[in-house]
Length: 260
Image (cartoon, rainbow, N blue to C red; front, side, top):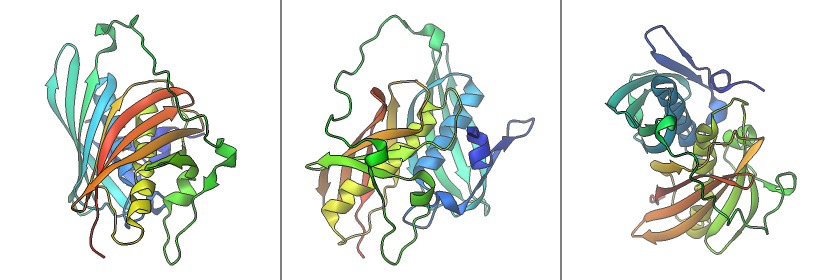
């Protein structure tokens, strides 16, 4: 399998200026590159700049990113002995700022690595296996390229929660956080869409994750997203991302329920 940069057409020059060539196959339901892909790129670049382990990301999707060349700029907000905080901005080919992320990274040698308290809950035992999951279908009259690219599959759900498995397109050590971003963002849509049932358009303009695990991702990740509430057109969701039985990330996202 290719590595992360190969999948997303990424490269950097000697001045560590980063660029990516993002293909239409990463487009989501609203005509632009999936937000999780942009968050994954933000984490990857921040990790390379800091040489540290990512502990969190807060992304704001300011405008849709149409397929094409992406320019990435970084701003080191703080570089301490334990924590580094980096702002990452992604611009499109027209030099418009499309995504802003803040990533916190930690110096692994400063941590008491002997302290371990794994999450014992794990994904629901009632879920279908990846190979038995229900493949997402293209909606009538629409084309969502990421469905063919990431092969999201519904594994099950209950009440306001839906669990989705998402294919990992690369194989590279240390990229668990990047893969979690994509799985998390793709998982946000189903529980909100099910509640809204065609009465509104439902883009999510943000994603916040805290990275719990660091095992290298396998062929797919599992993300459970639970709708917490819809209040006057704003939906709030809670997300958990799993690599097999290991909890990789927890987070939240907002969905704007827009008038059609």
